[in-house]
Image 1 (cartoon, helix red, strand yellow):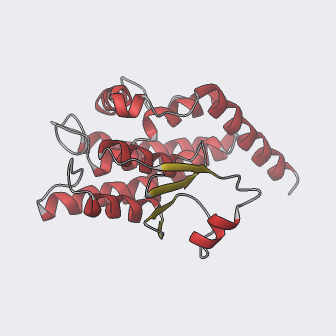
Image 2: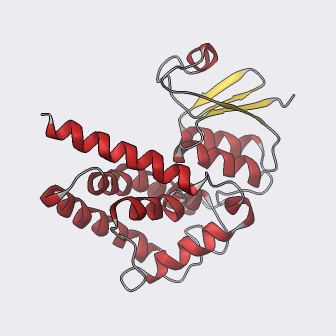
Length: 223
């Protein structure tokens, strides 16, 4: 049995980051899929504070929160690094990773989980945030330069989940004419073998997020 265990759900983009990182480092691990509606005693034991995934367990010690786990993986298995040795480049990568979670993702979810005027406002916010990513990609193949790095792993969910949102809502946020660099990055990142081999099934994602959206809209109607 592997000395590394990953507690995750099949659809979590945050857990997917850890899958990619472990694959890049060629670290063997066991996967424990969680049902968050019926959390296992092990998950509650290893993450008693947040009680959520992802959780990495290495030699019996647990690490929680996706960015913290990524840093732990990078520092523990130093081959195939995804953070630069340059302090400024490392800081920049962390900045864009955080920007993705604190600005890009919430604005896209605002557009996805609403309709009418609220959705229009969410689309505007999302595109404003995406423009910063477009600008950051100028002259680069990846956010990490010529190879996939920390920020790419952190933002990688965009390469597939944005398309899922489009299938559900018929709204395309990252259009080729408006975001040519980001569109190319999406294709290049998604086609990297380790990335491509580990996407969740698209049809299942569409069904799951369709359910999220419908439940959220019904909840709003009831308030």
